[in-house]
Length: 299
Image (tube, rainbow, N blue to C red):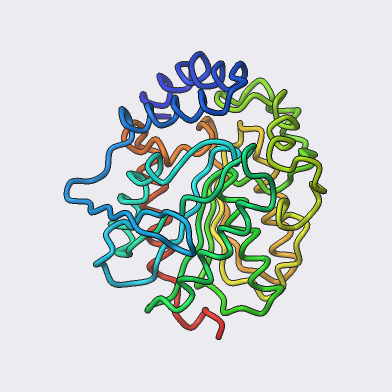
């Protein structure tokens, strides 16, 4: 265990978990996360960010001149907060390691835009870049990881050309909040307050069925899926969302690379500037991305 991890976890428990447990206004969460991103999440020197529009929504391109497959990444934030700007530093590091360009769509957020707005924007963004030379790799973290997997399931259901692969950090895959780890890890999770799971889900769903595969990709089929890379912390409340998703994918014949780490916070790669474990996870993912074969993509 790194010294940084031993110091960071107590700080996250006192600051971020307390903020998430108490905040009632989405704008407060959005401002706080954006402020943290400016202060703590730093891109590599020379990273290029370009504002653009994809499928009618604002987006951010990261190092667009790079060759290789496009990393289409959906940011986390419980479908309520987060933005391309809060995640672009991490994506710049990953894009450099994987030798790829990246794209972060600014999908619509709840509660102003209820389900399936985020899903519709994410699927439309994939359709807009489906012909990218070298293929596309889907990715995301937390709610954005669930969104990436939901888009993958819809691609398979509709018979669209497949991405080369998909990856997710601590994905939210079950909006019914039925995973055992939501209860068993309620005390050990240093960021996410388990008591608010159903409330946050309700802000997004607003009466929609939480078992809809577009909201809960754990309910999707995934037959014929390309390779998938997943990681989560043993100590976080969304651990079982990853474990059950891995089992679901394997049951449908999918190739899954799964890593369950110990003692790390939710979506620790986002904290790559603070945690050596975050940098190690990004290096491992980049290696996996570089090994994906273009032949894995459907047509």
